[in-house]
Image (cartoon, rainbow, N blue to C red; front, side, top):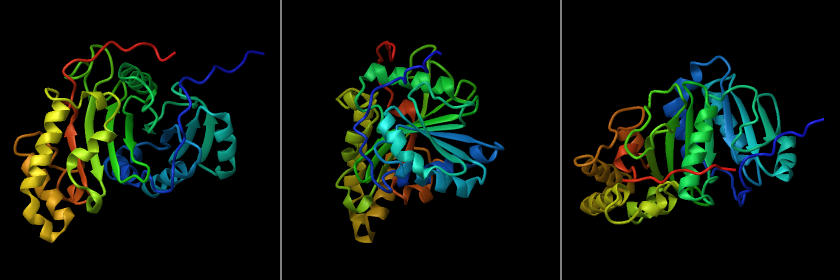
Length: 291
């Protein structure tokens, strides 16, 4: 009898906490709810759920409110974590051993992967994006990001499956591989000193690019200037200051200003979304295999 294939990837720290991914889940439901509702039985993968399945179970509950037939599969490379999660299974929610190879019975409509790629190199993170996007359904979406221990600072990128609307070889991608579509920054505004604090939550493909001359550095510097200019709005609260700063930023940067990705309703939640081209690295190295 042949052995099942070895899961692709390495074990993460596994740190997690209740509601850590609430900001991203709220965004997913609002922005990608229509995508899920177009499918009769959409499959969503939560990759690398960590030492506790709590955030996978929360994702399941939030997505079920958007689509009563959605199925969520939590995937972990650590068999001990999978075994610990199994008692939380119920109709529509399950947990499996695996990694980037995605051990599911059909291509998922969505993959959520948070705090999974932090320990990989930049080129390895590009390769992981390619691997995951290849496993998506033709209209599927990958939401890959990073957040702080309590979820107060977060950033995530969206990419499409092979049949999605995003083309290949766009700015900041490599010919023949997955091209990111958007980047979103989200923060707990009362605890935010300046927008550039979000730099520590940049995706692994960008975090080492936050240096002068790179687009992401220029963007965050401009956001800090807009934040400083919006300081008089602080008398109305941090939310109004953030909205004003985003409006100022949008004068010179391609901030998405229309729903579902943008507009004042999203900005008031402490979010801002831009096209990937606004932060794309000027050069990207060739990605090695994930093996």
